[in-house]
Amino acid sequence: MFKRLSPSLPYLPVSSKPNSSASTHSFAFTTMRWPPSSGGLGIAAIAYVVVDYIRHLSPGWHGRLQPALLSGFALIAVSRVPFYKHWSSEFRSVFPFIGSMLFMLLALLFEALCVRFVTAALGLDWNSHTSPLPDTGQWLLLALNEKLPHPLVEILRARIIGLHHFLMLFVMLAFSVLFDSVKAPGLGLGARYMFTMAIGRLLRAITFVSTVLPSARPWCATARFDVPLYPHRWAQKYYVPYASDANAIRELLRQDVAFADTGKLLGDFRPDWGPMSFLIDFLRPSESDGPWYNLLKNAGGGCNDLMYSGHMLVAVLTAMAWTEAYGGFSSVLIWSLVGHAAQREIRERHHYSVDCVVAIYVGILLWKMTGFLWPSKDASRDRRITMLEKIQSRLTQAAKDYDIDEVRELLRGVELGSQESLSNKGPSTGMWIFACAIIITAIVIVVLALTLTTDG
Image (cartoon, rainbow, N blue to C red; front, side, top):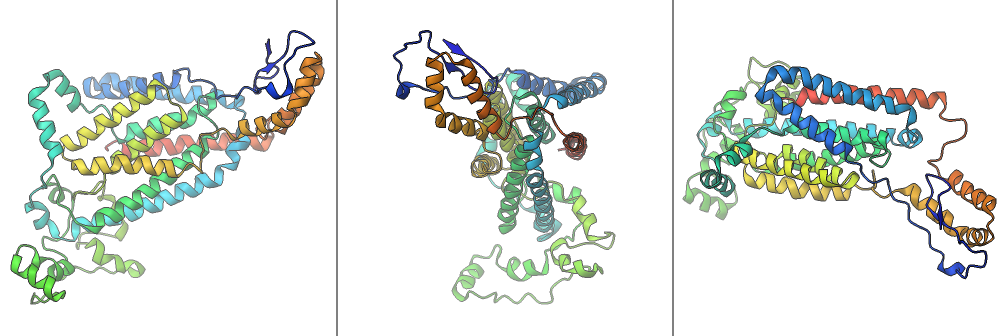
């Protein structure tokens, strides 16, 4: 028969006969597993997406339901704080979390500079008059519109999921550590998410700034950016003379020198930005613009084609985190939402198909490479198993002798040896202060992130 002496330790086989013939070498310990998902997190995710979609059907009801739902989520999470047992683990993850957040903010700043540069480099005339690239994914979706039933096409067109949804889904995943639905620490999971996001954003910026590609929406730059109509002086010298003349391109290849006589190059307005004046050639400000950082506010997602899709990177990282940390049927739902978001990015010409395809496999590979920040494998479980293996023979003998007190004592030593075990005194006052600070800070960050990304 089996006896379970501690909720955090595996079942211990105990022979029903004193003279059991089971040998020491045949004794096997059952591997402890993380509690199976109950489905509650998946239900909460569906409820959030459905309630938020009501804004397109009934804004009045959405205005009442969404605050109630989010307030309910927050209250339920806060109510679990006194029962959470892994604050020491969260404390060890504070510095990786803060470091990852700062790294991500710097990556986003670099990306915003690059977004402005690729739009400003060739001027508004080029952005407005250059034809979009041929995209077979767009052709396929237009063909499916003619073949599929109209209700299904309307579902594909519906704005079911967006950037702020995927961010909120990850926040819900990270907070679910309070319910033991996801392996602690939640800050470790958040650190991995932001660190991976930062690497992905840096790689994205380096990729799209390397080659300027025309937008799938030719009117975008004129509507959103106040940059000169003509190309930057670098483009005037090194690109414009060879852009469409095949003979000039052949001669350029032969000489490997920019031989064309461009005459007097058109210059740009040059404000006094002090130490940041080196950014003038990249941002190309106008006379009406203020400090350099004001130009980055309008960068948004950019207007040129930005290889690869930043929205899809966020979606894929959320799906990867959900699949690894929680799993279950809800992971299939999350990946379905990723697919829906991808086809909408292509359908609405925010990106070419290649941008979404590259974002998917880059996101998957990057997530797999950053497991050192939050490994899905339960380290405390491995420590317990190692300690159990060391006392295996003593446990077996105590079980044969019906010495339950000895068994309890041995298992108590294993439990106390685990770093995740709690002392009899409970959490210290400092740990409670830390817990409250973490919850308040996390809620503030969530509110800011959702506020800044609600418009996509």
